[in-house]
Length: 106
Image 1: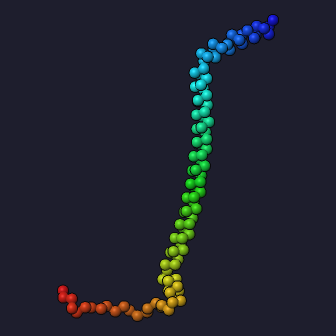
Image 2: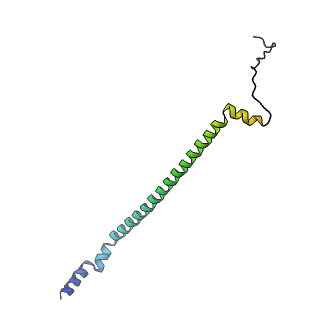
Image 3: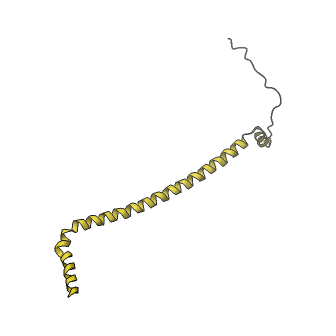
């Protein structure tokens, strides 16, 4: 008898009319659950993109510093004179001569 009364209570709460009346609320909860899941996926993808961008930025910074140091080393006067010595150029040791044009009047 007690089991029959429990079934009657359950049927009283979950009958067809109650389900139809609360259907908009169930749809609302379903949409909220879908939005929650989609937001989680979006956040995960955003974090992955941020981490990838940070990694690429560090690589670019390393490459910039490496190339900048190499360029600074190559722009030294001694390095330039070493590199042009192979084509026969050498550093001048004489003072430069100032040429004056006598046709220009002041």
